[in-house]
Image 1: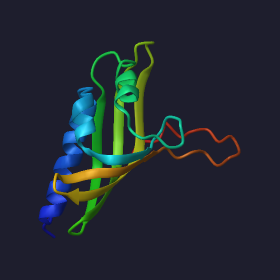
Image 2: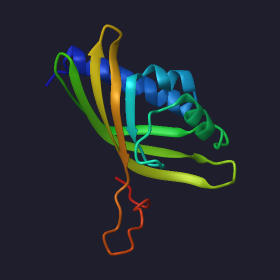
Image 3: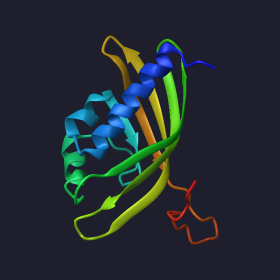
Length: 142
């Protein structure tokens, strides 16, 4: 089935955001979000507003670019609201020498405005082992 114009536009927004993340481009990441953007992401707190300062601080903990590949992106969109989800592979090296090689789930809610499609909600999650340890299952691969 052919993608609709809305689905194509949403894909472009997400791909541009992912490229900005990989390049540690704060302005590029922020450009994808709508006013009032809410993030339920991997790091604390439970709810974040996606501020520039926090994002720049996180980027500063990486030694070089951030590998940020999205796989299995699925998009459903109407005229004004869209929903997308897929798997993210984040990789790279942190300043402390830690090597990151992590797959996680990512979901986006988007809304179309006079400025085009913008992300209004983002949710990233890692499964956890339900064996009583509550350890994050960061060793999973698709």
